[in-house]
Image (tube, rainbow, N blue to C red; front, top):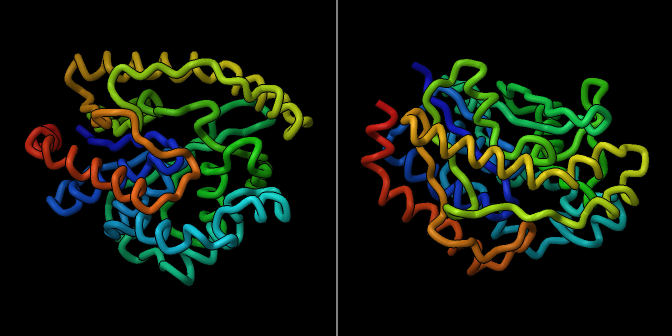
Length: 281
């Protein structure tokens, strides 16, 4: 029976996920596969490369660097999170991603993107880190409105969370029968309708599926949450989530807030560590 990790996105709320994963790493807990969406993939890959605190470290290091995330980058490149600096220079030169360890770890790693022409999810396995695979990471993390589409394999893609925020059903469909789902919203959370459709139409006028999917995203997300909790009741899913709403915006980089979100993830994992170990047996 294969065990998987399913990692929701949420921008800087993903530091909660990193805190959880770092405790699991310290405790020697392993899984057979990992799937992440947006920040879930960007931060979760460090679990497979065995690099605790890496996402926290580089976000603290570059929090005031306009080359990393800034309005200046948005104006000059079309991307609030700078495509070259954040997704290539940082992992290849400034806070080097351990590709050797990533490849040696036997867990499979997948991420989710959105094909903005068809409005369908794209699931892609990453087996090593190079310029091409880093573009897949950029695609899964490219939030609509503040990002330009990423072109890979003839597809134009943006953030996977547009169409599949919590890809538990997909992971089950490819053979992961037991899954730990790490959410970045507290128990009882329900997503409300957003008002981003008009902005999406303005920002991505040639891709009407972006606005359409964003307008119905709350329905998709809430249905996925219900499915996750149904699976938990059946005993094949373990849910880990914050105890309270995380006080940090998607792109907010206040040092104290980042530490607080990360530390809450560690505290939550430590409180649940025996349950996690039992589940992974």
